[in-house]
Length: 249
Ligand code: SF4
Image (cartoon, rainbow, N blue to C red; front, side, top):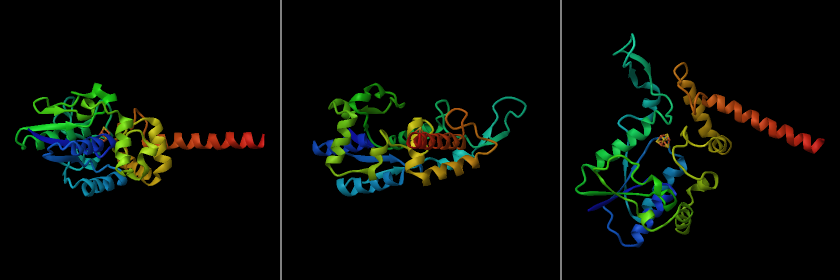
């Protein structure tokens, strides 16, 4: 079997790759899906990983850039008076019910695995997320979860990576999990942190949000990024106001 590492660049898939190398396992290739929405520090980590391990990452990309899917893809009405016609442009932000981004990612990986002879897809789910095993579609492709086999949990995975000198520029000081910086499915607290610690990326999201204008099905429910920005801004003002009240009261 040809072991293919599914690499996101996060602590779990990085630890999995490091341990497989340590154990002398044969690795056919390392594949990563580049959404175009990665943190800059994550892309630097990909480079460092290649230099450190000598493994080359095969970078997979969506059929069209994610920005196209978000803003420009013509959406054909499936019913109603405009059936068969373009009734809006762009999928809008992903949501739990509209995970078009995940679908693109899974399909790109499946397309790639199908051109490999007898692939065994190695997925870096940690031991404390064993419930996710089998959740990735494509059961026709054999899958393996080395961290679960070796009972390595998320905290241990991070320690293993840190032991090898990987820091992700401090991303894991701020976030428990690292994926697309603009993911609407992340926790509210993480978005709050993103706005505070990565204002440039937050500004990028505000700009994208305004491009969805008039056609924005929402970011996290019915809130837009601008709504969230106002909410977080108001929270900050309250904190300053309360602090002043305590200090001066
Ligand atoms: S991290 Fe979020 S935005 Fe990125 S592919 Fe996954 S669900 Fe989509």
